Amino acid sequence: MDVLVGILNYLLFFSITAGVYAVLALGLNVQWGYTGLFNIGVAGFYAVGAYTSALVSGPPPGALDWRVFGGWGLPFPMGFAAAGVVAALVALLIGWITIRLKEDYLAIATIGIAEVLRLIIKNEAWLTNGVWGLKNIPSPWFQPVQSGVTAFLAARPQLPGWLVSLLKGAYSWVYLGLLAAVILALYFLVERALRSPWGRVLRAIREDEVAAAAQGKNVAAFKLQAFVLGSAIMGLAGSLYAHYARYLSVEKFEPLYGTFIVWVMLVAGGAGNNKGAILGAFLIWGLWAGTDFLTGYLPLSDVRASALRVVLIGVLLVGILLVRPRGILGEEKFVSRLFKG
Image: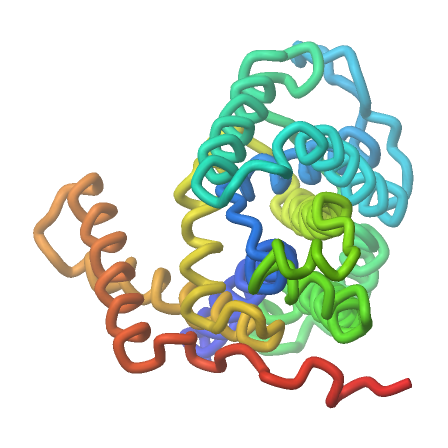
């Protein structure tokens, strides 16, 4: 039973991590899948959301901290909302400058801006505590849940060890439920928006922005709206990550984990399909975790094992695209079939 409990706890951690990536993939799908915006700066907005939520809802600076800002201890919903708003404002500023760039130039600009944001987080210790990171970020409802579990176990000392171990991780199940509710809400809200006339304009811009402009559409304004909406969703993903991990370090927002793996998830699942974005997040993260176990049995150094994992994911992506060029699910042809009226 102890082995089974260990497997359940690992699957729980896996599901929460994949769920956070699913939110990131939904945000990227708004930008790339529906509008054709080649954003390679996902990690930047992810980090902005995470640090904003941590500063708004986290504890004040400690005696050994370098930062002098934030730590207002506000409730999680306020930190969650602030993460989306600040990420949207940053995207509005960036988009106002870069949104008229073509695909490859926009990609270069966004990855450069994401690196600038990461370096600001790393070096501006007065704001983010720099390389020392933010600690003791509160998780929503953590104390009530843990107190309830502790009281329950104290009143029942005869429970078997495996059940005690399972109950001690009860909070993770609560957080998974919160994450599932957020994913479901975002899915239906994004679906509703993208199946509306506004969403159809985005698809028209993606296919041929000259033709969309000829129909009287303000192409730059619509692209900016999609860029801001997608970035706000990425900021929400950062908040969800911060309050589960309870510690933030700038290394968590490197391009590999914050941007490129999200692109692999979206492409594999199916760009232009929100269900595909969610499926791709769980599938690719499962394969990433699986390759970790696989390389662990090989006589390789950590650096070579990490490089091999990237190669294996790349080979898998190529294989998926050879069999399913549009991704596993692919884009739905009719954008108004689900919601009418």
